[in-house]
Length: 290
Image 1 (cartoon, rainbow, N blue to C red):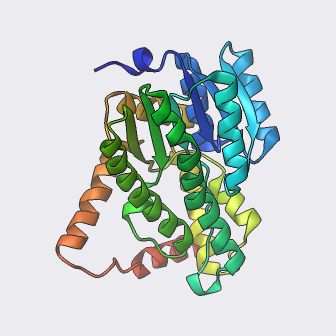
Image 2 (cartoon, rainbow, N blue to C red):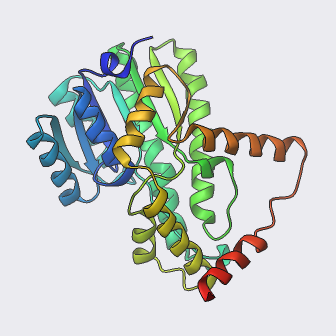
Image 3 (cartoon, rainbow, N blue to C red):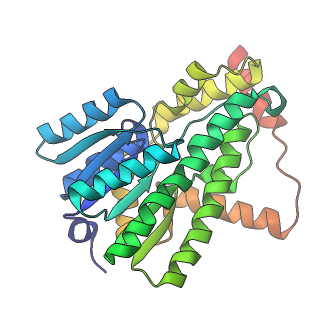
């Protein structure tokens, strides 16, 4: 089996949400390996900043402003990238957002925005890039970002959790459908645990929960993300190594990923109720008042 340095020493990668967080980690690591990377992001300034920094460090990167919720824009991006570079050897569907609050308090518009970015965005990219990958007949990778939350249930972030369960199901089905074509395309489900990013800060800024418990929970998650989250480039290096090894299940933290899968398997096998979150939230309340 080829190493990441051998397998991804050239070719073109496209990373959605590549302007920050885990996506930026993938961009920087893939460029360091030798790939040309398209930094696709809704925020053009973020994409340009990352691409410029990669180029200043001797790598190859190009910014591309795109809204993954717009199928026509994604199709245009795929056409542009293939016209300019001829092929895409790795597609990383990473773009995603978080949101907090009780399910019955979530605005309909915010629910639809989370689903449109986190789920529809993956579908749009698959729909535009995979037919081109199949037609090219070259070895390629489609890596879809789910989360350890994709095999868990967590209160006060239901839209995000639902979206990541959906991405995992989409990815498993896509894996089967690619097998039916016989195309040399590897499909991967990426389940990061905690990688440093702006996801909780951006969620709180864009859609404040307005619920004290949700605010405490997101504050705690942001603090934990900063203090114990993995560096995005280190996480990407680990995950790209697993992709190069041909794996379907890709983790930023192997132990936490295995624990999450086992907990889900046990929950389903024994038909238990979802875990009672009240003790955890009491601890958070105690920490907040101490």
